[in-house]
Length: 288
Image (cartoon, rainbow, N blue to C red):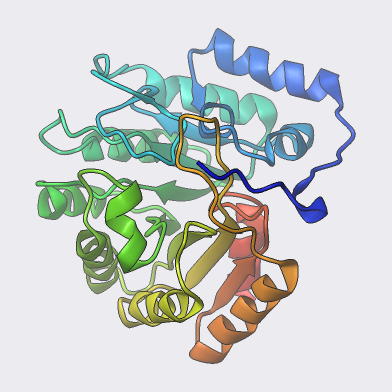
């Protein structure tokens, strides 16, 4: 395995306000709520926690798949916590959030892939009418139509599903997932709810070619995606697939220019960009 040294632009320098971070961590622990920021080792964790912002991860913290880029635990998930929607609203109101992202692990063990639990969480949170809700969903393998039907009864403000990478790299890093299935999910939701913005994200630096990235842009555009995020893949640990290349910041600027030229409503591109990073800002830019 060849390990590439991290360039200077990949090193994060941030002042940690431990009080804010510890307060949020304690709130999550006390209410048995998971944060993908922590579970996935997001590079922006300290910045977001300092701001009092987090992405909630429902349906437990154990995934039924074993993608070799992801830091989430793999195995047999526990039963659904039926009190989770109530706990979510409690935490949201305590932190005084106005924009939230709800994501989940893959739950291939559930007949609806966890869609009903997403529905229940959205329904409960909508009791606070000032909150904008973005959901970042799995691909709902074997239950896509049923899952979308369930979600259609209680829609979010924005629907997000990450394609993650290009077609040629996809099967090397996403196990038990399919590139075309993810595109199909995005297209189907847009066909059902044309007025709700759809969003997707890609990682770069996994061995993909520039032309393949541009081809992926076109596929996302042709499947109705409005907002796109592009960020550098960072290896969570030595057990995960290694970084093939660190993409220079100027290349991310080129990506953004290309995406806007193609007609995407908004593009957020940079080394540390993640799908949920500054999600409220992304949404506001889309609206404007």
